[in-house]
Length: 566
Image (tube, rainbow, N blue to C red; front, top):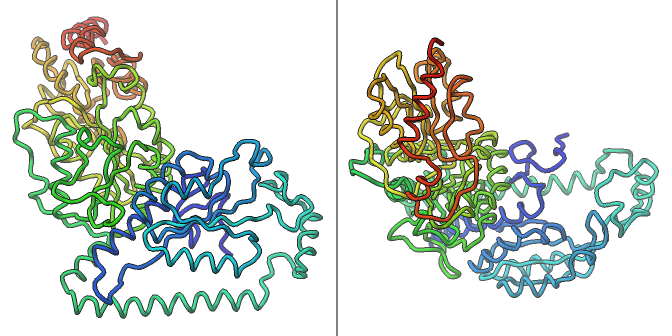
């Protein structure tokens, strides 16, 4: 028998479609499922051929609906009129610490109705006919999602029913026996009665018949609409075929990496039209809009663009749901600083090993006048600490191209592209293969250099300028856009990029210096920012913090002097 872990985990237990557990996040992911279904249905269905046609159901509890992420997602679902989303709300008025009224007295029916949901109340959660009627009514509502509030008694049949004591603690043998007797359940442990097995077998048989009929319908669909049929087959498959034209290097003089990301996204969509995404009300800054295509709204969902509103957490969780659904791929964007709001959802992407893509812009003190609340300092290292997540901080437009390529080709890792706001030079000497490996020698002076400068993102430009000023030394500049990818390379490759025999190594990144010692060694230096920023024009701020090319040169000279003879 196949049992579930403590909380449901996708790809581990049959029938589990998303990893849940942290309250509210499963609810938000189902909104992503419903968006994906609605988009594909409107895009591909024709006449009598409803080749995409399913409801999205979820069961949630009082705790889920106390979490803000669920409310954010519910607002988006109502705004989009996702009529095939049906939520069964197990309303038992008890949470872990006691009665729900001790923390919440809101009227869920009125709250969801105000968010453009249909709401239905089932008074008796043990009345299956009443629940069935509610589901049928929900299915008939085509332009609104439905919340079915089902009143239940927690731990029904237990001596502890209706109390928090039965919420999550396992019951003992005596209490289990009492519950069985209250249900007149006279069977041994783990015994499945014949009538239940028969009922489940009928469900399996019905499912097999439904699948058989769908394949027959799809064959007829392909005959009637061969082009659409071929396109839908491509959507369903995981095969990725993108021409070299999409990955053609940029030849501009200067371009912000956020701008380059937007250009790559638009190039990519024409050959990979599976993408659905948008921004948390910052699309013009994040460059997340697919040009000349519509945004989804309450009446039409055929466009690939989404207005998430200022709801970063649910945006990321909906992106997970879109990606999990299949047939489409989710992406989303905001400022890097707001990854704080999204972290639990990014973590679930990583736990589930799904290829969601996060486009995080304004990734350093260069945000300037927005001040310390908007200037990320500790965020890169905190995200790099997350297992399975690939953080990619490109130095220029062409490394941004590589980051997108890796993200799209990924099948089991989420990618987070850390992108800059300001223009940086478009480098003509990017080693694309090296960039795919997460790190490479961008500017090489020698196989045995005196100094190695290791930088990421916009600070690579500073490293190259520092090299020019360190003309008395043989200096190699290393671009290291991704620790995760670089660390996976062979020892030989890593040694060719950052030789352990070279003691004079300096890392340069406008963020926390934690973790850089693994690359610069005990004799190297890590140049960064370990305090919060200020509100000022970016150049003024960097000068005030002393983070300039001259500062880098001075610190390197001190390091070289200190390491003489080593």
